[in-house]
Length: 303
Image (cartoon, rainbow, N blue to C red; front, top):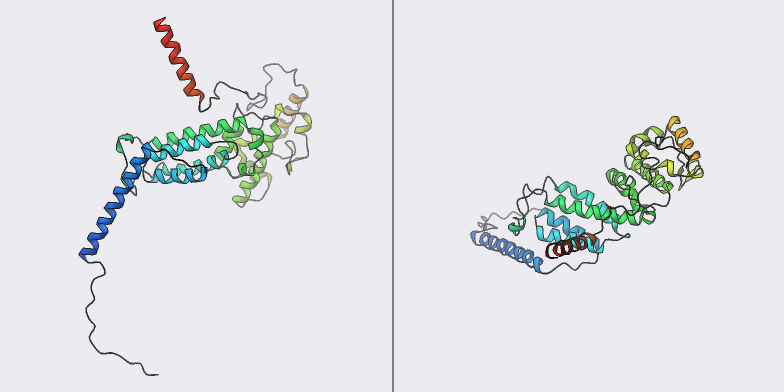
């Protein structure tokens, strides 16, 4: 085979991006930014109509990244509107991942802040929105605890979220054995995620304060001494409680109803959860109470 070489001088090639092309790109970027601002402005007048929480959650993440306050607020309002027992764990799990934006969203945004009059220069606006929705998620879990604690999505939550749910005084649970079950099943899944062997030392290390989330003193003797529950060892067999704690709990259960006020178990272990607590205000009741208080004051002034 003969390789033929063309010895003609190569013609000078034109630059890929000449001044005209560069100008056109700049013009396009300006138009995109202007269109983005127009869309953001229209969102203020036209509320989002999204019926799938996952879409609203993705939009919220995007709004945080680009500092679009109106869009972020509308996403939160939309999620609050559609929040129920079937999607609350999805929303709560997603919110725990949003915390990574707290220290990064104000560094080098991908677009300039939109509608700056609403931004108010506050570095807490993201966290305020997240905290509001997270609180409503916890209230929804309170009201539907038996259903939600049985969902497999509970096992995907973070330690902080599991602890927050299972230690709530307002959790309307029918039996503390359900709390124990979800705590232990979450612990086993967490050990797997960390590639730890399912051994007592690892279980204790992963559980930390979760070991005392179930209120053992409110269980029946049969529940506390059961061999297994939902595929995990029962409370007195799991090894998360020491012998002294186990004996004290058993003694309390046996003498239940005869205990003196000073003979309560530590870690709220014998304290009943409060159903219908005053702290359990739903999304609508806050507005209703404001209206009632307003007219009450108005009547008192002009009576």
